[in-house]
Image (tube, rainbow, N blue to C red):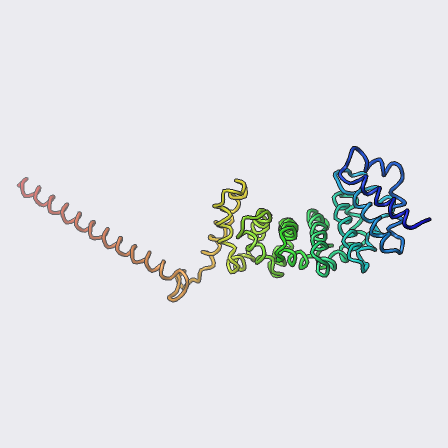
Length: 330
């Protein structure tokens, strides 16, 4: 077969699939055009791989599940994973992007994890260009949605990769990373580990600006604050101020504001419990809370003395009145 004709045919099919005109994507699958496209992805020619992977992406992109499961049933996952492990940047980008799109279907997602794609995508998330990082961020965020894949993400060093994406200035990378962290933070087994890996700093930074990632960053911070072991670290990273801003802002939903208020209350309650205590349960001189407790003790002493004086005065006046009445009776 003529390679140039095949490349043009692949691009034509990709163009027909783009934009979801009518039912073109489903028709391409039903007419059996997906299998030759996947065969072309396997072909050891860079231009052929670029054209065919773009076409497969165009077919898989969109809300239709049948196109994604068809890629899996036509044994297209391994060729796409091979692109991710290759050397051509365009092919790597197309491969990672396709895997992220295919992960929108839970059945295909489970198969991709089973085939071991996480390690390859994590590698590209740290080494690839910004387009690859964005595609990798989307892939990792789709996996983070499911609790069942959290152990796989941990085993393949995906947590540091997600946190690194959160530190980038690119808004799209931040949004995918914040979304992933919001779901990962709901796993109590990962809450302390995420904080130890440095998740707090980018989350607090994202909450300081009016941007799209702020919502998910706030959710992630609220989840991390559920764990008592993270409270000191959250305070050190400015998380309390970030939560206070979240509670005051008018751009977030009421439920998020309510959760932020509850979390700040829990942080404050635990902070009081952590105050150093003396032998009698009071704060000692030079420690946090000593001045406040000393002031309260002084106020209490004054109130007690004032009450004692009033009581003694009342008893004295009552005794004098009784004495006067007795004299008049005689």
